[in-house]
Length: 486
Image (cartoon, rainbow, N blue to C red; front, top):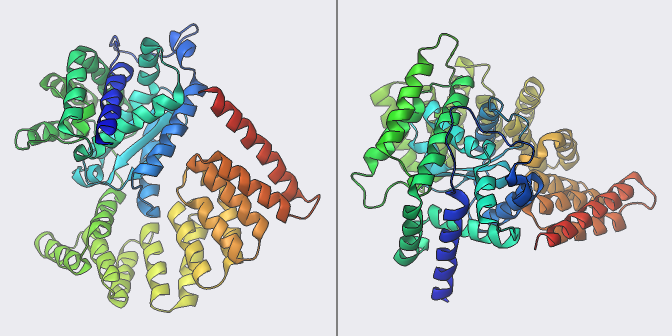
């Protein structure tokens, strides 16, 4: 069995070296697909989207994705802020967070971009984090995968998805593959290192323009690159991101030079949100196995560095996790008084207020934050959870239904909606929501089963029955299309 796993990992490495590290001529301007571009012949954009969906299914099956609404919402907002300033703003992107301490991020076909919690915690500023995300966005907008695919001319998408997933999984956990597998990967990459450098140089150039255009400090990218390079001098195993993004002194120098030019432009206005430090504090608490130790760490940080909002927010979260909700509530009250327009504090206060038993006040706070910030993803999800826990599942279902237009990219949204509908006694609607949950997960046949159950439970001739039937036909078409890729 071990030899079979090694064989798959080595094969994955060889294929990826062809697909990801294919010849690419670097130019000053972004290279856009043109009519007659061979990439469309070998890997169309629809095929690329299908490959991305298949890969995402493997990612969900094999990696621990972070389910925290606040961190997920922050990363999606950050990603879309950057993507909107790319040369392909119409490109659909899906940003997600992997619960892994490795310093890593990766781009997949179809605009799927994964960011590890370890990367978020390793960045020293929002611009550093944004620099890595912008680099990954550039890989997508420049269609590096598709161009490499045109070179390899391998179009069995399902097989390729499995192989790509194998390499992604190996890069997330270097111990998952043996030294032999890693050696095979390194040797294959080394053979085509010149092409790899061209890929990375282009992603740097395009990414740093995205970074500056989105209002981040362009120096964030070379600063982070420099720190990663320094880390390799003191570690036997370099940061995981470098295993698929070879970093050279030339890249660092080139990126720093471009960043300095952009920094000197008068039309570049840098704006970093305060959410970055809050999400770092949040992740520190989430990752802490001993909440009491997290409490002590944040208290020491406050003693050394003063009452920075992120330290106070982290302390409040740690106290809440340590079973001291009353103390956490007092801290959240202070933060909200000092920063009355920060929805993150409003959501946190509403949640902990429910925990201490003040149900009506909690509901008032949730009503206020969802009214002031109707598109705030974490507020809606936390309020829905609170409503379900207090026996008002019908209201939770109505609340989640109002947010459906944006639900497609939110992990667990349809699952929560299914739970609310089920507890409210709306069985057919619960099956409809579960169908969408399975569709997101790539489990098309499970989705189809749920739709058939929804159709059977709905009143004959009703609008809901018609919706279930129509959606079932769409899923059946998707199943046939997937089979055509084999």
